[in-house]
Image (cartoon, rainbow, N blue to C red; front, top):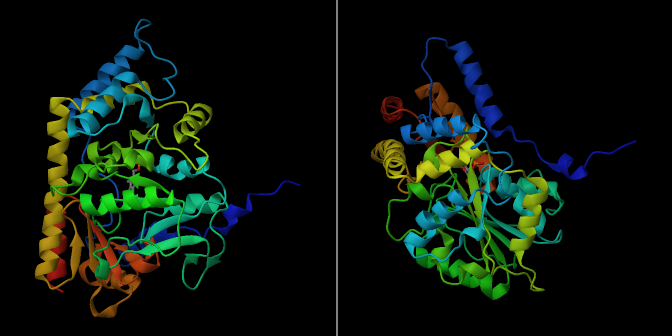
Length: 405
Ligand SMILES: *Cc1c(COP(=O)(O)O)cnc(C)c1O
């Protein structure tokens, strides 16, 4: 009789968003007259920008004509897109990355989950706490995380780097040496960033101990401050220790259209001199058959003059919401962070409420839904995430209600 992969059975089940949705549904059913505002949205809400839609249409038309029809895409992605990415995201910023180091994909979630495959099974991972759950869960599936402690919510073989108010929500070097370090800045869920100098310290640390950094830069387009790096390759020495994940989801609204890329520099080699570039190329070639041509064409349009202006305006809209939330909560006496370089606002729950107690309180008294910080890791307990992806009108109304509590 066949057996299921036991590693999957160890996963503690992701009740976070389903519990949020369930509680919201139950409240709505009991109070049909109340208008609930969701500041829990982890997805863009504005439609794709006109320049992107236009290119999608024309690319569809190309697929209808024998001469311009496209079948399988090249393994690494179309050259037109990789060249455009390299020019706009790297070369124009003085960063040394070449087009053949870019691997186009269907998004950063799958890449962030799959990248662990090219590392030895016994590799030790270090993650920020709280964190985007994909990093830990994908390593659980790979059998790399030891045993789960229900009480603490921690895995025995994972190195956790608590990100709390005390350390400005920035991780500190762990006591135990990791092999793989997951960093995500601007951060989901805390909205925190680290400066270029701080990231440089991580790059130096990784090079010194022979670790690799998996750098998730899905929110780089939301950065507004000058000393916050958009790419880890802005740091000296990152080519020998870092993999970077990028996504078109949050910067251009591709959450439903699917496009991302991963950068694996050719200088990144393991203890035996094995280049990870070749391994990821092999993995990509075997397990992935390319993002759709029409989507890659639309991705190129993100970098056109119109595309840049239009997506910038969308991000400005979300970031204006972020400011409304941040300023409003601050004025109401909350301890708040994030929201300056990220669409996420991270607040400390008042009166020592747990994250879920504050969730219930906010739902019942302000009819506002957010996301409990404890759902992102044990160190998220006592914190709460609000997002800027709603409409301006709803955001303003939600904050007015919270202020009136
Ligand atoms: C939204 C998000 C992504 C992007 O995922 P896609 O698969 O590209 O849509 C990646 N990392 C983090 C931390 C995110 O919040």
